[in-house]
Image 1 (tube, rainbow, N blue to C red):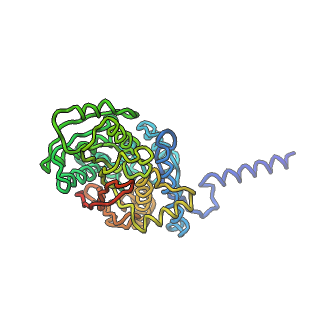
Image 2 (cartoon, rainbow, N blue to C red):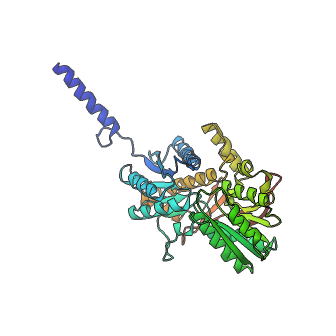
Image 3 (cartoon, rainbow, N blue to C red):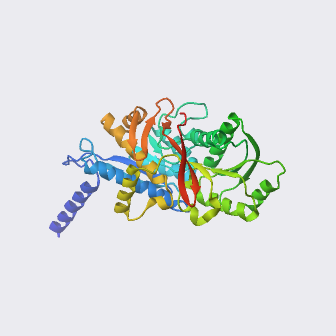
Length: 394
C-alpha cells in the first residue's frame, strides 16, 4: 500500500509539472498569448467566430514557421457578448489570469471602447477590426491612446469618403439621414457624414432615429415621405446589412422612392440580398477595404480549407480586417524581436507600411490611424460594382 501511495504522489507531481510552468526541467519558452475578443454568443456571434478563426489561422502560420526565438503564439478566445461590461470583464480576465500580451478585437465600437480602457489601464496593446469610432484611438481630450490601434478605417474616414463622393461625383445637394441612436458606430458615421457633407456645400434637411433591435421602420420612413421639403438623397447610417436591407424593403413598400441611396460598408455582405432582394438596387456604399483582389481570394480559399465554410457570405469585411489586425501584431513582434506587451505596442506604432490581404496598410504614428484606399461601390443587379476610389485623410 505504501508503494502504491508513493507512486500516486509521484504521478500527481508529474502531472502538475505538465500543466504548470515553473516546475523546472523544461526549456520550452513561454508562448506569446493573443486574446481574440468578440461576441461568441448571441445575435452577433457569427462575427465573433469569424474574427477568432482568422486570428487562429494567422497564429498557426507563424507557429508552423517556427515562431520567434522559440516562442509560439497561443490564441485564447474571449466572449464579449457584444456588451461593454462583459468586454471589460473578459479583457481583465485575459490579462490577469491568462497573461494576454495583445488583443485582436472587438468588432463593434461600443465594446471596443470598453476594451481600450482596460488595455490602457494594464498597458496591453490591441488592434481593433471593424470598430470605427474615432475615440477608440483618440481620447476625449484629443490625445492618442497609446495602446489602441486599428486595421480598419475610422468613422471620419468612412463618413467623409461617402459624403465627398455624393457631393462631388453624384451632385447630391440635399439629404436626409436615418441612424441608430443606440449604436456608437451609427452615431459616429452619421456625424462624420453630416460634417463632410455640409463642408462640401450640402444641406441636411431631416434626420430620423431608430433603436437597436428595431425591425419596423415604416413610421420614420413615412415621416420622410410626408415631408414637404424635397431632398436628393437618403443616407442610412447603419453598420448591419439586416437593418439596411429592411429599410430598403420598407422604403419601396411605402413608396419612398426616387432618391439616391447612400449607406455604410454594412451593405457589402452578400447576405443583404436575402433580406432586401432588388429593393437595395442602386445603393452606394464605401468599403473600409478592397476585398476584391487575388490576395483576398487566396485567403478566403485557405479559410474555407481550414474551417469548412465561406466567411464572406454573411460578413464580407470582417474576416479581412481580423486577418490584417493579427498580421500587424505579428509584424510588430518580429520587428521588435519580442512578444512583450510594451514591445508589441512600440512595434505597432512604428510599423510603417505592411502588405495586408486587402492591400497596403500604413500606420500613422501620431494618431494610430490606418491609411488605405477606400473603394466606393454601387449595387447593380445584385452585384457589388466598384465605381470610384478615395484616399481618406488620417
